[in-house]
Length: 458
Image (tube, rainbow, N blue to C red; front, top):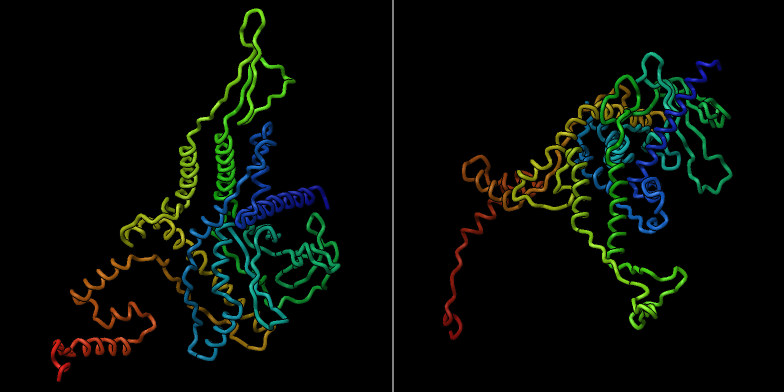
């Protein structure tokens, strides 16, 4: 390569390494594997006293908690219907989606998109189960080569496979799958991402395109990857450090510190409940030859605890989360107030719909194509899907719901059958009307009271 090509390759390598390392860090924090990251941050912050405090390191799963509260787009399964009147095709596609666990994977896709900013999803064929599966490609696994003139358009995608570090088989763990619009191959790579060794000879790409659907939080500007950093992970590490300091302060504040003045440095003091210390006096002046006392720390730990929580609340508020949601406390007297507190999350997830919908449409088509190429079924290649997102489910106050139902029955905007169906979603209209008839019949029954004497002595 010439100097320009070498410079471009080196810049790409550094950029990919930075992105991959960040993604690994984000995913580790999501799974609460944060000890080493917290330890590294504390070494930077407290280089002189680190050896005294590293045993107190605390980590908390704040990243997972906030991500789960943000990722609500697929909290309720979306409605994905093939645009066809053929019931057999509808049933076949539904079966393929169920086998691929599409709706379950969508929840995970949303969470890792929130975590990493952008991820890829590729359908894979399992030759053992004979089913389509979904592989989620996080940024730490991917290398994307884009078009020189259109930097948001990938022309080659490479991602790691066989990454199990504890694999007992004598195979390499750095094998990469390589997709282009024309071919698919597997190989090991050099540091400049050139082919090192071909593991699987190239085969034609049956899709005619790179079969990956990309999910992202925002459209990047003149690039492929989103450059925005994750705000949750730094706050998680900061919280770990603050909680570690709080635990250290609690430990130190539980015990007074013994201090001495005027004692030889080599003198060993024996202290305890059954011991005493003799402070010698000068034989001429009679003055004590030393001094001993305790220092009792007096840190307001409650105030420190509150500051830690305020820092978490501030980060959460920037993400659209309410304080009550973060602290898992319910102080709302109505479902409307609860909805208002979640308005930031609701708006955030509604904004994602316009970005997700095309990705979801691409993914559903890729699943059908994967079934066509490798499975036994033949599904339409050009079928379209009608996609409808469902609103975020907000737990309502049961008493408030009953009051609303009573008001609607009173003003005539709901009948009794509809009220019954509201509390019994699986009940049909006919079943609800039958239940209304049963209730009315039960009310009409006359109960004849029995006196103490009637029928007993007769």
